Length: 306
Image (cartoon, rainbow, N blue to C red; front, side, top):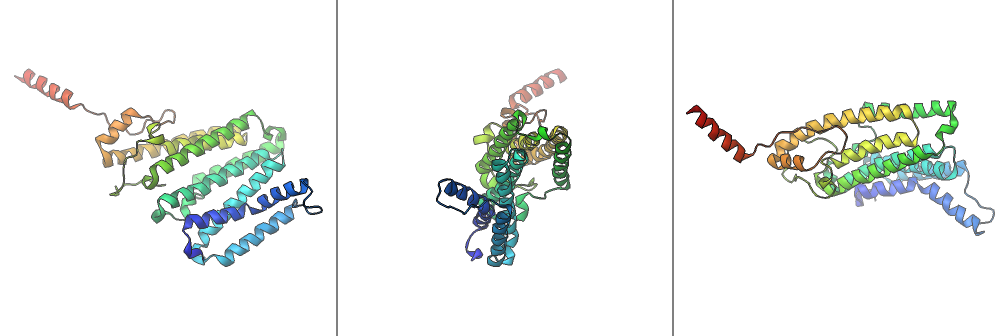
């Protein structure tokens, strides 16, 4: 049956299954409060785990092996969203770490969804971006370690506060900006720098690209810093900002070299009109030489030679 639906649909269904126990719990909350389910209350960790286990077994049985890699990753991210929402809604002490789980799960799942929707032929399980570099994994682990250590030393610092709310706002802004960039670019977007121009590759300068030359990178930059503000991780906020800036500075520089190669003066003029959006990153800039000025200079030079 899984062969009859595209990968993005399969991913969406498995992601939804991953959230199922949270939905059941919230539904039971409403019915229990209204007195419609006397004596039945879906409110135990065991019942949640049971639902998740049954769902995973069902996916394993129903999905063909060739597509299971897509399915289980979507289910895993849905389960992470499930956990995050549960912590954020039902606890105060772990609300911040819950929102962090929500941010991560939505980010990674939507990366795959957008890519598989607009670029299905180049989409692989790597498009979930769960493991795109060793540095990303190290950064993720560093955030968890700092959170755990500081929670042990100073538990109250991890309660919801103004800083964590600012972080949530930054994450929402960054996520929306990045996905808007992917939506606007459609098939022109790719997770990896392209060094060979495809025949259908067009220069996108409208929508959010009229505001930033690299809106997907701008969104990811502020999103990554926002995740650490949510956790109130002062050390990782600084480290994430430095590491993200270095990564995007290098990436944008090399990418703009290829874009200038692909689109020439057209892209150079676009550079002159639109900034990047990440502080102190200018990209690879080639000065535009005005033809009239050049001609005048050549004439002047000729007269001097005479």
